Amino acid sequence: MSIACIAIIDSQDKLSFIDYYINNEDQVHFKFQTYTALQLISPALQKKLNGGTSTEPYLGVLYTIYLPNNDYDVHAYITITQLKMIIFIKQGTEKLNLLAIFEKIYGLYRASNFNPFHQTNLNKLIKPMVVEFNGI
Image (cartoon, rainbow, N blue to C red):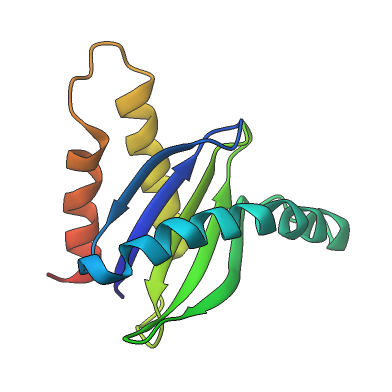
């Protein structure tokens, strides 16, 4: 599995965190695609809620990005407080439990942002997890 980018968007749809784990040439694409994915989260959530009784926050693959060097699947997760998380994962890699990855990121986000005594930057908390998942 290769995580290329992680983005977190707050309940007012403002980008509160984005970090890249790939080369610089694709970073602009990921920032643009984050806003594209944001537009697709609400319809995906409505489709999931109308389609059954599942209340799982993981929305699945929203779409696939085709870039010159690699293709990436765009996965989304939304919390009860409308915090949205988007992960770009390189296509063709083995599938891991993405729900667990999203929950770990959400836990790190809460630890970083909601604890007034916590001094560690969110980037420093998430980076070791991404390195572990990417097998770097």
